[in-house]
Image (cartoon, rainbow, N blue to C red; front, side):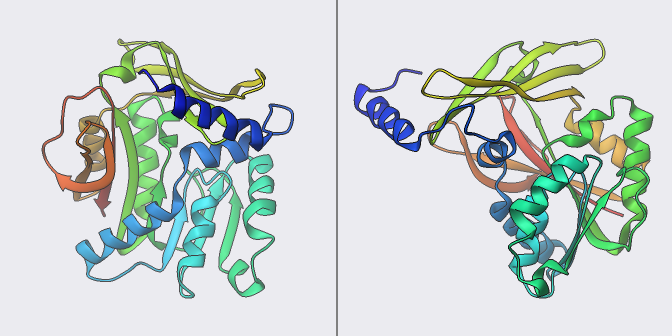
Length: 281
């Protein structure tokens, strides 16, 4: 897409002032700045709960919690909120603890429990809400694996709990190409290296590139299966969830996503989309 010289110059000056280089940047920090928006996700969870259950949830389990950004945002939201962050990577959890938890007041910090365990087998108190965001469940490539995970999620919810997950797709998702997005001080690159239409397997990378010409190549790699919304709904039903709703993102006048999601049975056959699903046990 063409950009005006003035806007481009402003961005260049801003990125130079930021002083970001590959050597001075941390991949987890860049990931959070590029991909995550926990404030809007917590707001979405609250709106959904008010709509579906007529109240707000208090207990959250964040599966594939990584740096625990969502969990930290959740417990800061209200003094009654508690969170359990589950992930298998101790290095990422240690980074997230230093980044988000160590500076918390003790009364807030006590409301987060960090578990370095497998989301398919983790045992912890049942919660109001389980969230599996950033498409991480896509690492389960076989249907029986995904259904088994969903079944374990269902067992971890309270009687009137809700399971939330996100999904992505669109015609561009099946193309072996990269997409750049300029952010403050660096460029985020989503790179689809390989897609296999027979198995649905997809190999994606995230790269970060900087104004001085340095880069962090393959900062993150995702060897996934690209599940469709219809497949996800079928798997959730097979896992015992009695109802599933899809929340589709609205569009701006220029055709991009507007960040507002509404329950619907009709999506668009567009080049790229992101959606949320919620499932009732």
